[in-house]
Length: 206
Image (cartoon, rainbow, N blue to C red; front, side):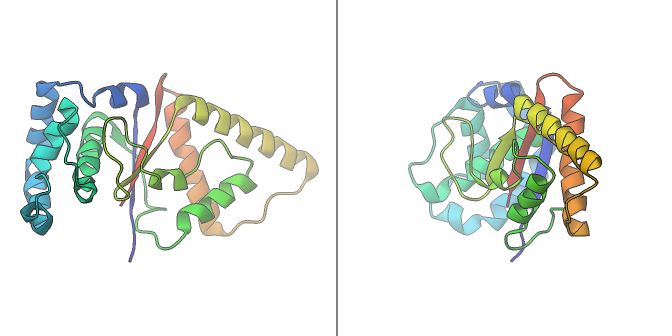
């Protein structure tokens, strides 16, 4: 079974602050932009909804209003997807063709490639960890993670330092072409973020 990774460029702190903001204009904007998606998702998850999970719209309202949330952890996925919709509306979707679809431990493979290039401040596998803003409940799917502006700045410093060292030594890391391509895509995300103050990356693995 394959997975996908959706990545957004946005103001990380401002985006997290939208959870529980009780901003009904934001809620209506998401409903307007994703109305068809909400209907399709309810159809896809109809069995879980019949067993008590919130509808996509109910989950969206709970995220924007900070609750109430179902006590059943099997229902938490709906709040995760609702948060992704919020990020999709307020952020810019970044190219993800190196990661969608992907299989197995591809994210950790790319992380090892990033490490070989000197980068340890960020991790693509971290997009699987479920780091949702409080008070959203934890869910394994979708996974969620973020690269803050500080982490991105450090990662770019690490890359440039490692690049200079490699040029001076004449020894470059040996990586598979597809790993290099994926690592370069990660760097492109970071380059986009560094041009906008306060901006970072939020990613979702599903």
